Image (tube, rainbow, N blue to C red; front, side, top):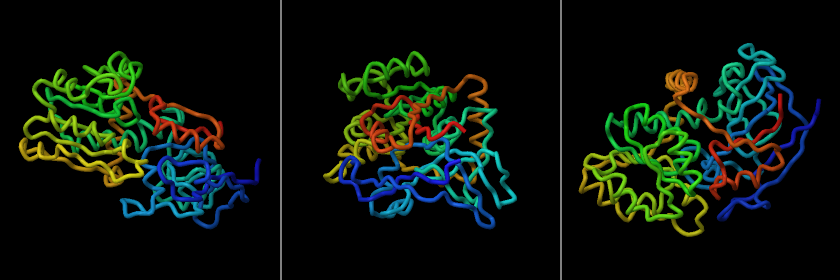
Length: 336
């Protein structure tokens, strides 16, 4: 067994898209657990758009990753050694273990998972933070009602694809916005969306007017920028806009583009609210039970885009910002 730990450290604050020089690929001695700690062998790492924000040195919902620190990331792994009575060697756990092969934990903020019930990458997607974000963002913040029209941007992505499916389960009409004919076909043919808009090939505002003639009741936004503006132009009375992310703005070298159409909120007495999944941590259990039930019953589909090799991290992360991932992007570090 390797006594070394390979890891990616943040070497510089990115300007625009992260580049190779923003990372340091480092090798150090594999850590050993002290009293109350456990050592986790990282098997799969979650790659998420939020990671771009964590690299910036600014006030946010989490402190920024420090220069010289292991890059923050959610991951699933196996307990290799334990001096914590709550965790046994061989158990599988999920937590914020970072972009590295081995991680030490005191057991706080991590949870046990069962690879017999679902493949490990699923605990980073539909049964992980991605699923929790979709569940609470749509149901608690968006508050959809049967018969309402729900529009999702970034709809073929990890969160968006789950949001649309959950909205359908709740009796809503669902329209997804995605880039490319293949992604749009995936939404309608495989996930059951009522319609899909290809923002790369058609006028989004005109398409929203066509597909949402009575207006948008819930808009779940993962993109921001021009797409958010287009959606605001078509909102219904008392609409709810969920701000989950703004991937179109994360790598800007100019100021973030805010919504020029925001007066639509006033005219339609609508609400726009941001959501951060960590606020719902005490309720993760209830979401996990319902999400797992839908998955087991075949009512919810979870798709993971798994890329092998820890060393591929810098270029694999960029797939998120180029729209190249199909579903939840996961970096495979080891088999077991």
